[in-house]
Length: 316
Image (cartoon, rainbow, N blue to C red):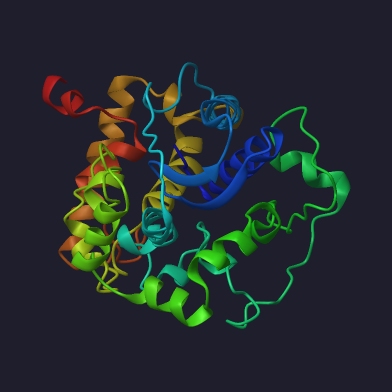
């Protein structure tokens, strides 16, 4: 769903615009290559989701020359009630980069809200260089104009501290030290789960519950990733997609404007898969491979980035 850094930025902006247009209180979010999680207090949550998904799907389909629904038909939505449930859900969403093995700490992942809270107390008060108002429209859904009090940095990202209700979230955690404790601890505390059960009949917020049906992801892996062990030799989905989109596809299509992974024929897709996988095997065997700079990727990553179904390789 997100093939490069610009997609991740527009993804957050679509969530921001949907939150503002529905007068919802945005609390936290985390964007991965295959999905994102967001938290908001809203009188119309389904309208919020509809606007968010539709705006991003229009952007993505236009950019990559595809048609149709983006993502699964039905999305996961959970109503959160009670202080302990709310804090557990905030912990989970803010720790997305860590849970998926993309960062050694929640604060080391750029496309989530962990760095938005207690900024002054944690020494994160530097204001980035801002985007001129005349260029902001390039990074927002079409026909949308955001009041200038909502700032945008030079990358095109609306500043999270302007969009998210930081004061409300900070009240939940009470102190910066308590927030750091929740961001840095490992595993799910049995006492916290019991506190949620004692609070009300809403299912406790757990990793297994929140990661339901996430593509190619086993929630059990989060126990390993929470130790902060990041495989720096493995490419991320974003890096692999960018390699395909920016270096390989322009060599296949005569007209660069036609270059899109969705415009590949099935035969072209499989040939590209085979070629990249052979390069990956060389890298796995520690042979010098300039294309990858000694880094590797998994079969699932390659299949995702080439938009291939499991059956494609077996039937061709």
